[in-house]
Image (cartoon, rainbow, N blue to C red; front, top):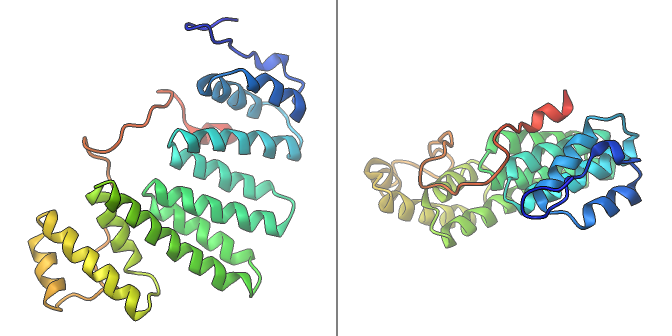
Length: 228
């Protein structure tokens, strides 16, 4: 079947659901056709290996289209069916990163706790360090892109983590600049004058505004429906 623009719609009924044939069907298709097909595949009975393969492919497309929340949910579901503890930990850590990019810190924290729960004693401090570094990197990225609101939310969350004195100073300086630029006078003076310390900064619930990036996605799509 042909779609407008010459793209071919892939009929999920055609699929044998082997990894090789799924790859072949995806090769000549655009992202939306791939998403449609992979979503349809997930509605079919799949063995664990094929299901993990399809979910990973779909998550990769979501991530490339900056659909970070959807990608994070998929990767975390991949972790649940991963057959090795190492694979599960890696998937939970990956989903942490995606949720932080989506500025959904509650979901990032869920993935963090899931990773810590199954990690070895050696892995636990490494995961904690990665969690902190993800926030630091994302906050700096938001600053570089002049996404001040997201940067503020990310630095405020970072301020609640276990920071060394140098990191606390860096976060404090960033917050002072952001409070000033965003006109948050009370927070600015409280932090600048020492009345508020890093670690006690207010956390805000993220809500998209008209100035946030608009991410294209199918209007009737809900990633949670893939797992019902």
